[in-house]
Image (cartoon, rainbow, N blue to C red):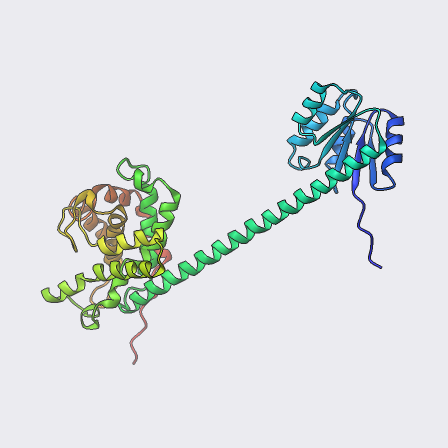
Length: 372
């Protein structure tokens, strides 16, 4: 035989012993009943574990009346969901209205009718069960949605890292370049979010998060550059440099094609396209691919321009040693107003220590010794 369902626990609150005895006689055949003859005791029982599933509450009690007990119950998150039925000799319409305004679910006037009390209690317990079920379902669904979103974001991040790493493997000296530049861009964006020229673009945490996510794709177009040029350990010839410059357009177009294939606009890909296409533009208009200048250059690309150049300067390459921070800083400062947006350079100067910490945290491993 299956076990009968557990009895619901009710709390009856009344300062009159005869009323408590009467209510116990009506309810105990169907429910587990707890009693309290004062408001403070009722509140202690309601806040205990496990709490009652429904409270039958008298109004006229000494010290703390039923209205105040109800108010405190509803103000406490631990007891706010317990249904309260007022059971009282105060039978005026204004009394009932006040009780319902305080959060009670029902109002039964004395003298009571046992069948009515049992019916009302049964109804409100059933409603509570439905509410609890829906609340639990909603909490489960919220958690499931959060889990799925996190899963999708993780897959997205991994995909971006794979694509970015694929581009970097074509240029095997860049190491942790994509990680460092990603964090440089985030640091610059957070520093500039209160700047009058940058606030409209960076005043939202979500935007900075999207910049962080999209920054690794800045050089994705390198996958389309021939090895003889990309891997050349020295300066490019003019015609080679023209080919190298196409990596900006190749990157932008590759991301746009992926977006078109998906059939939807993805916010972080907007920034990825801007960064890939315009991070080689210069503040004075001497950059490429379009020769944009000043505010015409997207904010995302202006941030990446400085992050990319700084990291290239401090990083070791086949054809050069990594430059000390002080020398790289001097070059960045020299490019203020020509290569770089002056405000971005000022932000960099305020973040020197953070840039150095990022560079140290994501430093490339030392080169492997040459075979004997």
